[in-house]
Length: 278
Image (cartoon, rainbow, N blue to C red; front, side):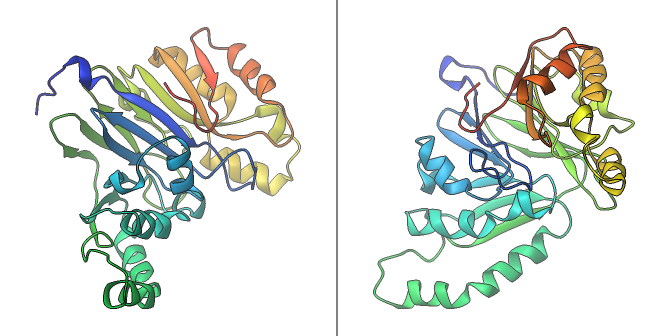
């Protein structure tokens, strides 16, 4: 499907959450929105997602479509919030969610856990609609998984341990936006990241990793991307802008992580922070 380009269709990226499992007060759980002509596309829903969205001046009730990279808790702990809070605040249509195998079961169990809340809101005195809490779940495979008048979304498999995890490529009227999710380097990443104007990528500090115990070093090296690895990847892919998120620092300062990348990569790179807009 061709994406028509008009002035009002210029895409905007907001980093709602750039955090990791580490509970950093300044960084909410992983969550990104892409906005085109006031339509909001959410990628991941970590802790604090709805309050961060409101802080970014986004109407919670307009959060109607979401894409999940993988099932780790720091990317999904905001899922009940995404289902129920926009409903309470006026969402009148079911939430559409696209994600890996297991998201259907997770959704079913969340709705079951909140059944008393649902019944009280619908059958009690609260003037609420009967659709906004429902969820249309789509468990995905690699390929084009969604399209509408403003965007086409491609999912690709990444390397994050033993389960299926995905990255996404958003084809908008004015740019191509790649989002890595959590991943170590993988065979097809150069092809999957090709032509990205903006690449939003997870990363860990090579120097910071040395402070971790041997077993944690082995884990992180197997399932995440180091600053040096990312610099090499970006040097080949050459995005117009490389945005770091889900940054594992372990005591290293952000500027030092950036320097690790800049030692080996000459392109434009920024350390993403919550609520930054691109």
